[in-house]
Length: 167
Image (tube, rainbow, N blue to C red):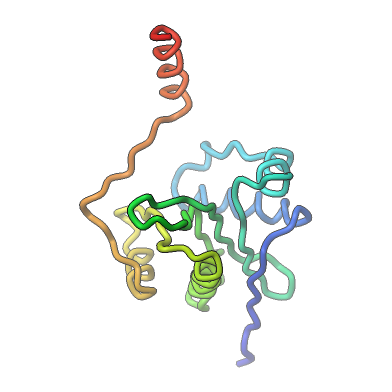
């Protein structure tokens, strides 16, 4: 059996069709395909504009995108250091168990070390037992004492109206 040559690289604007495909596959995997609002134009602006809001690592075999990791930088006041928030990590089903996810995490760790980051944070669904085991094998610690909190766009708009009433 021949060895598969997997490459990891920073995505470029020409990769937007592959990124969109991977986003849709990730949303299907997560059970929420209807939540995807990403468009090629929006990704071009947000990922490849003058001040990118996030970054994408692409995993490829023979220039075919088979997985990705999306991330952005955060700041820890406790550590007084930057960190990385891993937003999405996804590998196409037919390429799982080929060390693709591991290579994406290793490249993310390399970026974190180059940038002087003190941590990499992310969430994983409590029901994703395979994902949890994978992250633990990579050295990730599952923090049970923390819970994800979110203000969605409706809550943001509501709170802005409340602020307008105070000012």
